[in-house]
Length: 196
Image (cartoon, rainbow, N blue to C red; front, side):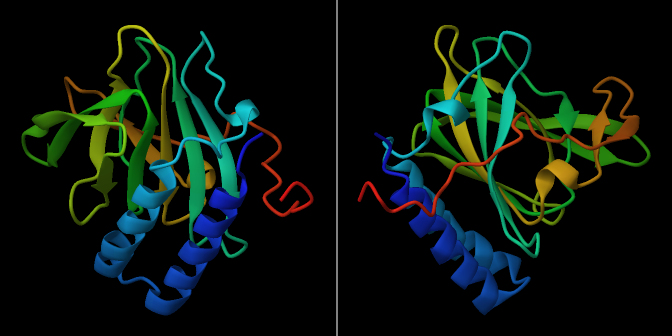
């Protein structure tokens, strides 16, 4: 049985953080990154239903959304070979790898020259990446494993499935708006303490 209490504790701690620091992105990143790192240090809490890959495409499962939509927590589940398009977020975000590994390709948008690759790296289990319009917001993410599923836990400064964002053509830099939505219609019950 999953230790869903870890997710509940994370959400409560992150809610307190957001209430204390408001929109102070630097503090959200410094203190929130430590909270996310602690959550992904344990692989016994993510409910099975929110860790299921699909052969069609990667899955984006909403685990929690703050009632004021100040932040959301999402599990991304990647089958081998799956990748996102080049995209942005328009809000701050943190990505922590729970299982497997992710490859991140970063891009910069130059209004005159278009989109250009600016680097890439792999994120192993326990690694946490940061994104925002202030520090770099455009990337493409993929499962770094040729065999096996990878799962990452994302925390965003908004209800990310409802935020209008952009996908980019990597050759031309042209962008189109999109709203990602979620792969699930229900969220885990973090409030049932009967099994504890």
